[in-house]
Length: 107
Image (cartoon, rainbow, N blue to C red; front, side, top):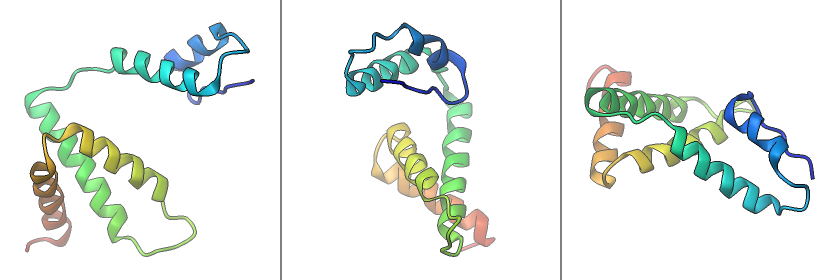
């Protein structure tokens, strides 16, 4: 089994240490656990700005016309991340609504 780590970094250094007979699903889980441990903790105003930027990106992609170069997988990943960052669906809806207001220039 050969696993490529895009972009280098922590994953690129860890992957060569993995034995060849380890199932790919375990490797993916293991790397996710490690990456969650090393991710920066974002708080207060910085967290608000990350949430707002993420929702602006989602709303921008949603507003684009359908086409062969649409970043659908990016949007799916962004929505997943937004759901994990938000406390609840109401907060997510608030940020998405705010992003759409910014993009549309008003209600």
